Image (cartoon, rainbow, N blue to C red):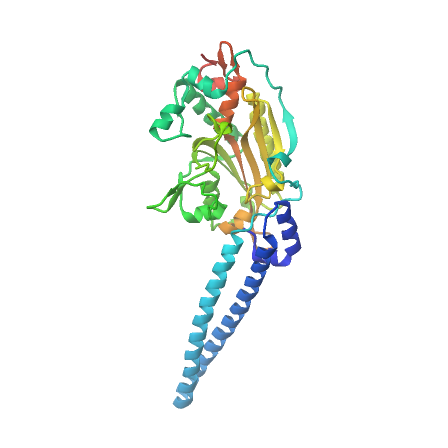
Length: 424
């Protein structure tokens, strides 16, 4: 969430940034924020004056009673009664202004970094890196959902029976390959200096607000209504919330965590051939990396995270590309995002397997995540996160790109985790 002070002092910068995002009604909302803030500050000033006057009169009453001037003391007491009513009214007005201001601020996305290109959709994203040759598959090569059925490693129909579409059942070597990928990603992240954690899979409302998943305008989170809890859409949410309402020291940076969790997303409105098989699921496994950084170091950290994910895909020997997301495709909370996509040879299309983002202070302001700087002043930290990696589309890419007439080969780096070299 942007701070009111930042909006007030940098109105043109904010409006220009929101224009890059194609954010509609930006000027109207920003003007409302500035007007509500002015009303809030004026009300706060009146309240402060009323409280100060009330304290002054209370002392005066004590002096008058001690000196025996009871009549004068009672007159002053009447004034303090009037001031009490005034402070009550002002407090109510102040609370209303603060609630209205919060509602407005929750509607405003993060300001894009200057590197974010203009654009309306994913078609306007910039390719900044590409590596790996697209393999030439044998005649009769299959998409991953057909391979899953042929080798009996993923059962989409059984998952549909148990729960519904988008909840596959992994079986035999499919389940072992899934577990191998999780272990491999966690090991690589740990080697890179990330501390492994295991967070809850359910979060409360404060946690969802802290990282920007709530208010959930698109209805993408699963809500457990009776307990008012939410199934996590990514490990980013609980792990980043470890540091909600925390005051750090500069020496605490960098804070680096990694976590494996199942993730849950309703994916409302997703239909068609592009969501078939593992392309889009309601429940899926993902390994995440999360960093809390000093503002001066966060973009250096973002580059380090991008290079780390790049290294994983290079070791898996999958053809991939890195995209810098344009303003129209940028997530609500992000200042700059790089997407990683693996080429699905059998489907002849690119599949997103990771997003690596710097949120700057946007989440930290919601989380009240601060640190004491060298001058001893409290300052907002920067938060970052990245998929390292999301498993379904990585698995789809592996099954399709590594298929042969004899079966599906296992990438060399995974053999020690799977215990087998081929699925046949």
